[in-house]
Image 1 (cartoon, rainbow, N blue to C red):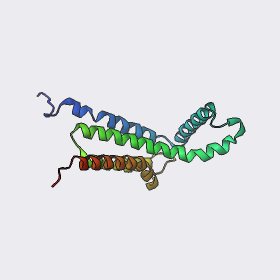
Image 2: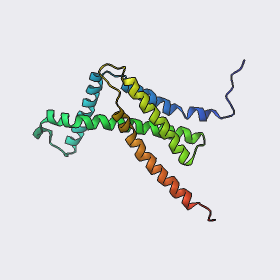
Image 3: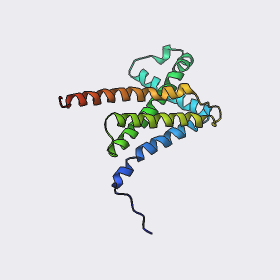
Image 4: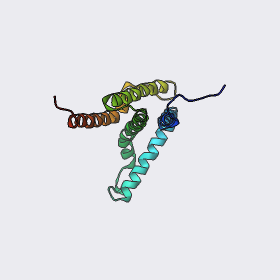
Length: 167
């Protein structure tokens, strides 16, 4: 018995690989116990502060670093959620576009798939030591996706109006 793909070209199936890779990366980050995740966030915070110090935005010598780390902890962690799921949404938009989906249904479908994955990610975190599945994290995950969806919908609406045939 010989395996053959349906009439769609192979590149259409391969278009899902970036979304799969992003989903695996998100799963791996979410599978980290709380201590490991905190360490990674603190490392990223340190890099951000070092860059800000290098470009003379701040002077690390004059700041209370413990207080600064504490105040930046939540924004860095939540920004990571927005970036991860925003990137995941872009990979889904790409795959759906290759599969000839266009217009508002294209944006809605990618939004829905991202939302469902964000929910499943929080469910997954319930089983990770020191982590919790939070509805608020799903909302934060979707912030970047909402911004992207609003921009795309506005662009699509503008394009539809521009090319509309008068009645």
